[in-house]
Image (cartoon, rainbow, N blue to C red):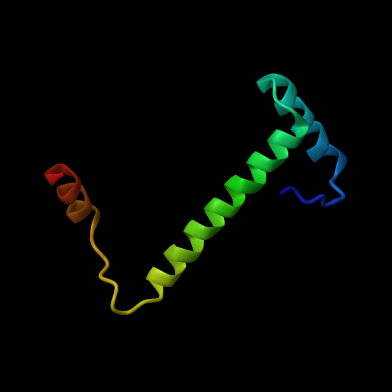
Length: 73
């Protein structure tokens, strides 16, 4: 189910959205929904990272340890 929300956007932002929609052969609605979805995904990742950063029991590893772990996989 879709819900209609009205927002005021700066003219420059609307121009950017229109340009992206035209360049990608998508609707303006699609571009706005994709942008909001990406923002929410990034914000969720940010919140998780912040929680881990503030968790004293969460071990912090070095870049070398991370690279070594990736090579083993």
